[in-house]
Length: 417
Picture 1 (tube, rainbow, N blue to C red):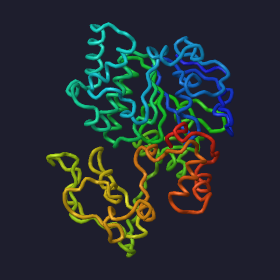
Picture 2 (cartoon, rainbow, N blue to C red; picture 1 turned 90 degrees about the vertical axis):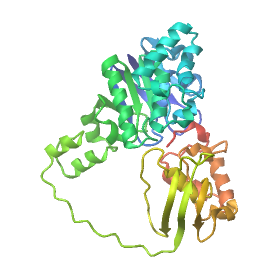
Picture 3 (spheres, one colour; picture 1 turned 45 degrees about the horizontal axis):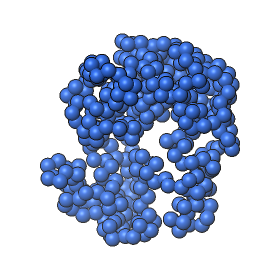
Picture 4 (cartoon, rainbow, N blue to C red; picture 1 turned 180 degrees about the vertical axis):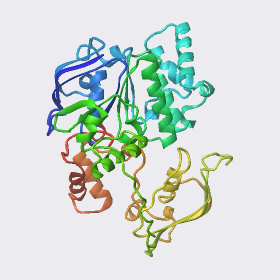
């Protein structure tokens, strides 16, 4: 179905080759997982398959890639749209219509499909992905899991033979993620669809995949069964890491397998966490917030929290539970209807922007919302100015986080991670 033959990819002025002389074949009806460190090239490999590289993003490509017998070098992404469907990490960014049914039909309209055929295909995917009750809903009102299902439906409506997904569960809670992965598993086994997905949360997906491609980040890749690849991979889900530490000799792909392999393990006594008596940095008193004009549904209801200096706090909850709204309280962006928020005993709205960032750093789910420089180097320089720190401070932190910093790249051209 998909064949890479001696494929190499490098971008002009890049410090490394993305992939170098790689060859492999993906079979029809296979569910393949791409793994690798942030920036290793997972998204690039997906873009090679549907022709976005080199036709839209540039790059020097050598070797041959074929999908269902078609050359991605000879055909542009639009000419491969009936064979390859792709779903991005943040589906709502790719939506072009407000209504679910219209969004699903858009791809068929672009291909000039006759209206009677279009209606039939839209009905088929609505039923397949249990979206019929949502057909007239606005996509912005859907949960994360529902948006992901709409994005998959929009990709499937053209009857592609290959479906590519970039971090499909990154924004989903465990229940919604399980729902999406179960649908993908069913599509592979019932329809013979070939699915390739890049994912960081490996514990969610290893039970579904047939094989794994490990992208090392030095241009090389390894392809093989999940147990074989994870046994030698520097990246592995927590269950596999625990099995290695216990020297079980085998690689479990599920908790059930782990329990059969592992000796009897007794739970360590739970230690009381010492109370941190630092200064109260964030206080939320009796806060309620709502995005509805008529306030029929609250995002937060009578919330009381105090967070002291030195604490590490995790927010947990399903998609739509109010986690993001609670974070926005700390920067004065939550739509409060009652209650008060204090950052170092002050209303966050009373700070100037430069004052507030000295106390609260906020990174939204879509980090791209914060990036406006024309290169990573310029972005770091602007961050130094905004934060009033010594020139080079942000760049030094970036180099610590990234093994191979690509300073001349545009911030929106690099991976989401």
